[in-house]
Picture 1 (spheres, rainbow, N blue to C red):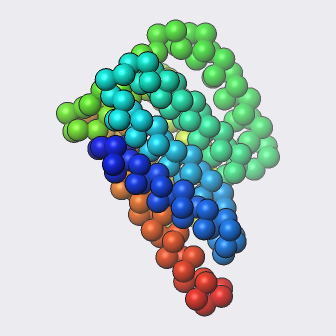
Picture 2 (tube, helix red, strand yellow):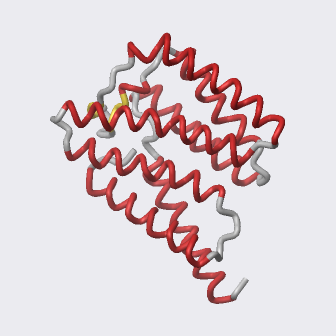
Picture 3 (cartoon, rainbow, N blue to C red):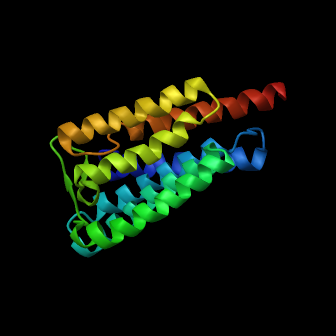
Length: 201
């Protein structure tokens, strides 16, 4: 995501601060997207620790494990918040089966490490998986996204996903542009809160 520890930490602090304001003020009624973006924002905190303790392989392994868990948490949140009951139940069943097979077949081979890529962002080696696993994970992202009841949000989410796939294909760095998108999202939410506070809408 972000290209150094300072930017990663500042992005995390900014995102958390805006989210807290949003929840306390209760001016943003649609909380689902905020919770999902919070899960992405927490990845910035993990990357801060990865950058800060880059040469400490023990910490890098712990951060990498937490990062992989956070990916699955993001999928769970997307399924829970943006699909109807029937689709949600099927997706959770398929996700459970996928995770079971992943733990048995792939987890022992996962390289829980991070290194700096050619584009100066971190390579998440723990997400550098055989293509079949990558495709299934992407499908678990796409299906809930397509159920979002807002065409603009769908386009934005798919664009973020496409950018992630592109940078993974070219540099092996997932979420390279998420750092910028996250800050833009939280700036938008902050301005929306201020606008609603001023006009009481």
